[in-house]
Image (tube, rainbow, N blue to C red; front, side):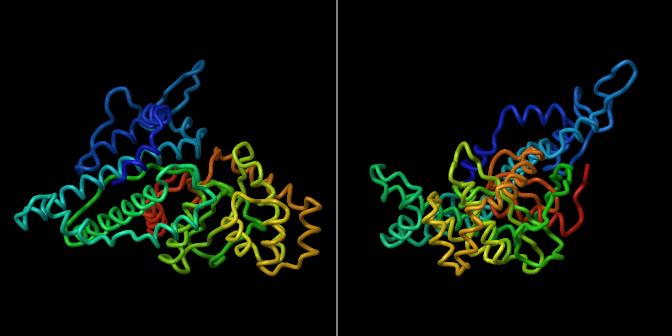
Length: 362
């Protein structure tokens, strides 16, 4: 059910780098699912092992890892997420097989009864609502578009019901997971003046680097909303700009306008409206949004016209690139880089690790 996301995470070159540089971690992860541990396979290096020598001066694997910092974290997290998703799929398979055997039915019959048989059909109204909400990003010339939307929504519902059913089976079984997350590098971000929501002293600071015209940033918004609802008073969400000029040339203007809205305490309202109108960031549209959210118009227009926040946005871009972030959305959880529009479960695992204080730092 998760093949699309798993494929999206596959980076052959990146995985090769991780397995070469962090061989010990790869060795641990490969055995952890069975609850066993052992020495790193031949050819792999322990963290403090010497991997090079220059005129008697050693270079260790730890030094290599530290120099790579968040870039290595990103690759290792991708490998870990792939392993974790595959592990969860294997656990789900065993739970479903066990339940089918207990009932004396086939797996297909069980899934037909508990998953597909309990999925609400997609109506024409559902399709129309989805189309109206997303038509600016849909290929209008695509043949049979409405039929494809209907199939997409049906698959979504079936996947959600499958996950819900597996969760119920898992809650009634004894499942222990010993697959350890990789060690992390924590960075210190400049959050001065950045718009945020949630308690200023929350135990979790979730920093999002985003592009207002990035479809993946739009796609992850419901996940972030769910996180804020699931962890009330635990998360401080901070927004940072990373307009991808080569892909979305109008996103920088939207980012600067949003910072002008932040000056008047209306950033989040402006933020939501921009995503509704994306990819339109014409001056007329930005003014219309400003009026809709109740900004003082002369002040807003003067702020935009003066280029007041050109440097603000560029500092954010430079900061992201300095930490190896080149795409959006990208998140830092208490200084840990989490890249991509990952599923809710990937975020909750990281947040739960942070709240439990169980994460190993490089």
